[in-house]
Amino acid sequence: QKEVEQNSGPLSVPEGAIASLNCTYSDRGSQSFFWYRQYSGKSPELIMFIYSNGDKEDGRFTAQLNKASQYVSLLIRDSQPSDSATYLCAVNDGQAGTALIFGKGTTLSVSS
Amino acid sequence: NAGVMQNPRHLVRRRGQEARLRCSPMKGHSHVYWYRQLPEEGLKFMVYLQKENIIDESGMPKERFSAEFPKEGPSILRIQQVVRGDSAAYFCASSRQGASNEQFFGPGTRLTVL
Image (cartoon, rainbow over all chains, first blue to last red; front, top):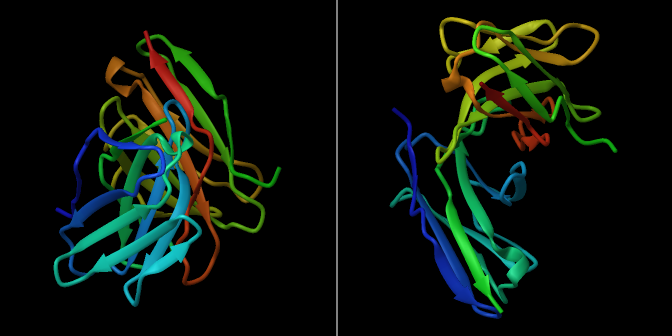
């Protein structure tokens, strides 16, 4: 059974701080790693994805992969109250047309 | 707006009725996926389709649920004889043909079974 585990939180950080979100995955064959943001009552929004060959930075967001430990992280620098949401980690084997395996998400709360 | 479209956004059915959920993928996308999100649960894959073909239905319940993606028109997820446990948010996602598997989600259909 392929699984993705995330701490449900809530993770609370003050405005301007760095928020660090993590997930672990069970399938060693996973090749693509995705972070989605989901506001309450809304649909998931893709914010970052990385392949198994490296980390990625995009604005205030950095996604990092530790393949040996089967661990993916998302760092949000200069956190804003608008970043308050549930962050979903998802993985798949990197092939087009394969299902994403999602974690249950971590709720982030950024206080002003 | 070239995003994934789903309708209806909200659907109320009584037990035993049928529910039909529709999804139109983003322009240029030929892969459609259906996911279900139960309260307090994560997103669970149900089925993956391309035009006129079901490619992977490993996440679909064996009974009452079916999906199609006809040559013309939207993809449809059909739930027959709905039960209260079917109440959930149903999301459709789409992706391009090719090696990348970035999936973009529609706004979802919130199904409530009375």
